[in-house]
Image: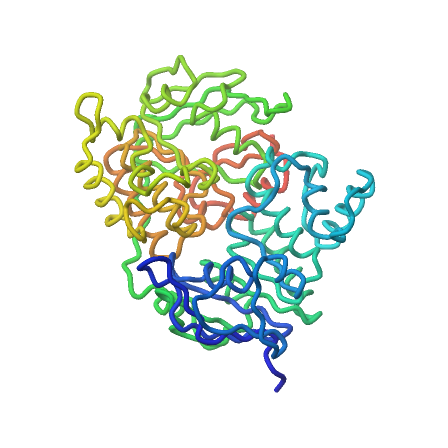
Length: 505
């Protein structure tokens, strides 16, 4: 048997008093997809960042082709043939899609290039990989989160990597896009490329992985090949036993509407119609799903309901009262709370502490204030209770929020929104990057909100999540909503609508 392409031995890494990795050993072979599983905060991303040169281990060794290596930067890792798609985006927002791609494939000595050549090269790369990127001249900062993720994937795959690290690459991709990505990974596997694949979706592991390594609290707790364990057994190995919550019962048809959108339309930042004539009513006690490939009006719908974008036309009512103003304070006062699509850019302020981010809302600050001043002991108690209730792993309440893993940031954002006890919860990909136990905990909390009469508008690119959780569904395609679909959901019909099938008369 040939020697492993990549070997890690006794890797340790601590952040203050928190041990992120404890004596981790890992072997990666040429031409394999190696899945790394673990609950939020298990150390998966820390391990990948060490392999990619973004972090230095406190101790331990890394060998590539049997030769000891110590990377001082990501550039060193790329030169050695290691590429990475990060869980949080590393794109330059002010540059176009094509320019971001060319940064990863142009020779480092090349300081100038013709724009036409850049666009043509980027188009060829995307076409070869089978991933649709849309307008290559569009600034990355204006793209929806799903399209930005596709740019990251193409950028990493375009670099001729011998080892490709994918940290939650499918979190905001649709099932069709995931299938496209898996076809790319299969081609890479046959060509001898090693793929390290981090995901919380066990069905993806059993579909694509050759071998599986399971981590818990910074240690390796299991190694197997995919044929040896079922999804249920992997789940127990990953997070231990847990009680799966049953979906909440559907509200009665006569339940009053908590959220009503009547003929709502919106234009995007380029002045083009992004949402057209949307009419929907979400009842108290209901999860109403908005399905669709990212970039079909979901971002504009979220921005309208969060007060970041006024509708071009139409009206919105919450609890039967028409809204007169469309700005964040007015939407919050009406009882709307939001879980945004991009937790890092829209959900937290990284340099502020966990405690400060837990209270990052005027309504929550009033709960811990006396007059114009907040009460430190009340702030601490509030944040500590939130961290405990949602199992958010932190080094301390005064640690900066940017020190949290992606999944723990997501749990903090979800917990803060639910702490507002909203009438309407607008949740965009709420379980992105969460492990199984954390996802169930989120929906258990949603269930408690539904039982007290709240309504949830679930906007998700994960069709499985929509089908499993929503009571009713509408599909957005090019900004136009489909007719409302009732349970049992016609899965084939929803897939056709997402692909642009026209409604029957």
